[in-house]
Image 1 (cartoon, one colour):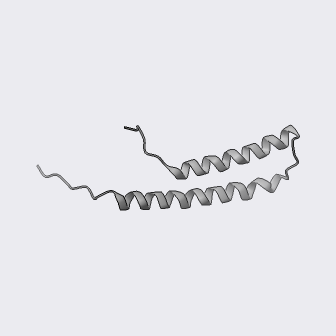
Image 2: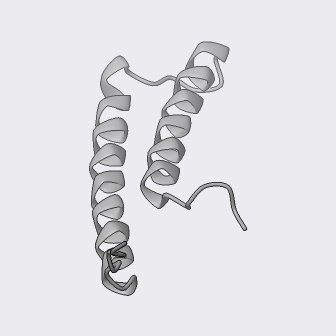
Image 3: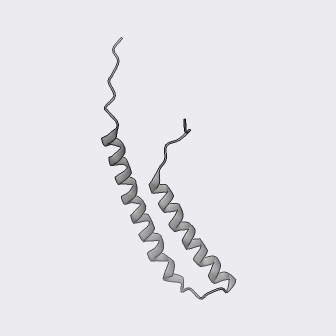
Length: 73
């Protein structure tokens, strides 16, 4: 039994933010030249995609799980 539920939106956000970090590290190391504003579309697009994936996952999770019945004493 997993200790937490899988959240694909956070996975997507982490992937895009890690990619932004790789772009900055590559620029700082001199591997390539990246303008300062090049990371903005990467971060904003990644956050937008992460939000969409999170909403889709939540809608799917709600659709698949049956409603909980309240127990009466």
